[in-house]
Image (cartoon, rainbow, N blue to C red; front, side, top):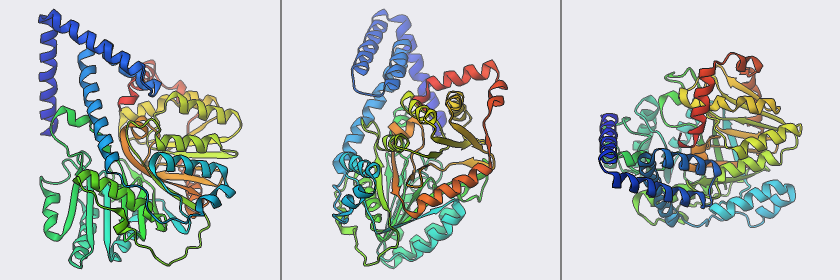
Length: 491
C-alpha cells in the first residue's frame, strides 16, 4: 500500500513538472537556473568530490528531479543538527590514566581515540571484556540469558525489529521484567520496521510498562524516503552488559528463516566499563526521538568487578552528513598504519576513490589485504556495484573472496593482531555518509583475536575471485555495473 501511494506521488509530480516545462518556457528557464545555482553551491562547498560530481550531474541533466532530491537531502541536515543538540556530553567515569596507558602501548590506537573523542565525545575504556559471537544463533542464546538477568534497565535500539519467534521470545522476557520494575526502552527505525507490525503496535506495549520511540517515523510521502535512518544496533543491560554488531531482531538473523541461504553475521558482547559508552549513545538517540533531556548519568551504574582483559575499547557513534565521518576515517586509519595484514568483511563494498587508493597503496606495499563479500546477495543491484571495483583492487594485489555458504552480513576490520572494529558500519557510501551508525574500536581485546580466527574460517567457506571471473562477464553486464557505480552514492 505504501509503495503504491509513493508511486502515485512520483507519477503525479513527474507529470506536473513535465507539463509545466513543456507549456511554460519561463518555468523551464527558472528550473534550469535554480539547478545551476545549486550546482555551484555544491561545487564550492567542502564535501566528498564524488558527491559533488553525482549531484551536479543530476541537477544539470535532470533539474526537476535533482532539485527535489536536493531539497529532501537538505531537510535531513537540519535533523542531524537537532540530534547533536540532544547529544549529552561524555560524563562516564572512565579511568583518567586510561588514555595515557593507551598512548604508551600504541600511538595508532591513541590517535584514533583522540580523533573519536574530539568529533563524537567518545571515551576509551579498559577493565572491559569483549566476546565475539560468530553467528546469530550463538548470540541469541547469550542475549536471552542476559536479558533475563536484568535488574534495573534494558535499552534496545535497532534498525529492524520484526514479528517472529526471535522477537516473541525477547518480548516475553521484557514484559516479565517490566512487571518487576525494570525500566524498558525501545528505539526502532521508522522505515526499518515498516510492514513488520500493525499500526500502533509499539504504543500498545506501554500497557506492559515498556516505553518505545520511533526514530524518524515513516510517512507515506516521497520526502520521507530521504530521511536519515537509524542503522544502529545496540542493547544495554544495567550498564553492565552491552551488545552490538550487524544483527537485527528478526528471524533470518538467527537462521530461523533462510531468504538468502545461511545468514552469517557478527555480534559482540561488551562487559565492564566500556558499556557506559553504549548507554550514552542510547540516551542521545532517546532524547532526540522523544524531545527529552534525560541525563545519562542516571544510568551509569558503577560495579566493583575487575576483568582480566588487558586491552582497550572505544564505543563510538556516527552521524550523517559529517565532514569527519567516524566510521570511514577509523577504517582508513587502521588500513593506513597496517604493517602485516588487513582483513575486511562487509556485505556491501561501494567505495570512493580515496578508500580504493589507500587499499591499492597498502597492497602494493606488500601488506596482505583481504576482503570478504557475499556470493549470495540480498540486493542484486547493490551486489553488482560491489563487484564493480573487484578488478582494480585485485590488479593491485588485494585478495577478494565471496562467502559461498550464504549471505554474509558481518561488518568488521581486523589488522596486525592489534586492532579491530565491528558494529553496523558497512564499507559503502550510505554507512559512511548517510546513516546513524555505531561501532566499537578494540585494541588487543579478546574479540580482536576472535575476529581474526573466525575470518580465517570464513575464507575456507569462500570462493576467491580470479581473472576468470572478469573474462566471463559480458559487455552489457560491465556497462550496467559501471552505470550503477556512477549512482552508487545514492544507494
